[in-house]
Image 1: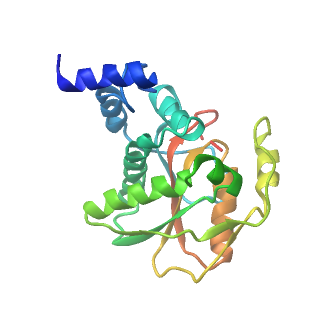
Image 2: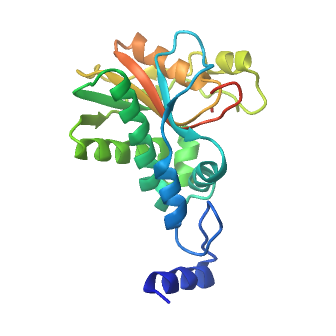
Length: 228
């Protein structure tokens, strides 16, 4: 038995650790699930609110990708952040290539509620964005992460709301802070469903004189084309 197999089985015995994708014993995503996620081809997300710039997703919010995201979001499996950051980097790369090439850009994460950050001990979206930026810089793209949005008010839980209700619920939820960056902005988030959150984030950026060229997410739900 290989050393890695022994380590995985000892982790299962000690911690009950299993791959969130397939349930195989081990720490974090297993090699097969991680490779499967890396093979996913990012795509443009349709069916979102009018006026949104192009939105790309690394994959569909289903199966292994959904399980990995839920483990990071709901079970504080922070060891999965590098894998998720790599997928966000792929979505941003698709956006850049579709735009004909951009020498530099700024990733602006959708802000998280302070209660969520306190509960997790980390700002999940910002952490994923920073990992994505590092991967993109290693590919030669000049990228920085700017926490340029904050919550102006706390919206209600989006669960069970229609698209129109989600748009109304998110309206005015964010505001831009600090001076505008010199480069174009890509708004980033973990999931897109109806596009209500992204639409509000883009609105707040544009009101704050940010040049938004698109948005990128790790995963998109496929109900009518587009999570959150």
